[in-house]
Length: 178
Image (cartoon, rainbow, N blue to C red; front, side):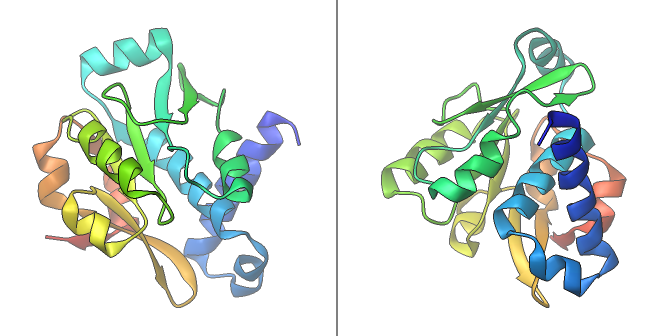
């Protein structure tokens, strides 16, 4: 599948989730949906000016760690090289302080969790997690399941404390946690 076609597929699979086509949702792999969400989070997140300039020069670092299941990893790695405005997504398989967006899968090891929370402690890192435990520990966004659909929650106080702004369009789709 070519990059533009993959991009369209990921975007429309996210849209279908919110429109509620349950038959289409049943056919979409959960990892595809989450990868699509991450791409849209990138589009709808506004980073500080200095971070945006760095991203324009070196790319936007999406860190996914190493512990993810191989099939799911393929969907997330498909985001590598995707253009988002003038920025290019660069998928990294480890968590470092240079992560712009860090995604922690539920099957991550304890060592990866430690690295994730260290990397995502930066005010310039949008942290996305899959478990409620990791969300309580410090994630800004958490994937959830509601009525057999992938959804997401956002903790407003954490986003306000960061140097990242999420668009009102994204926040309208989120389940807000105060």
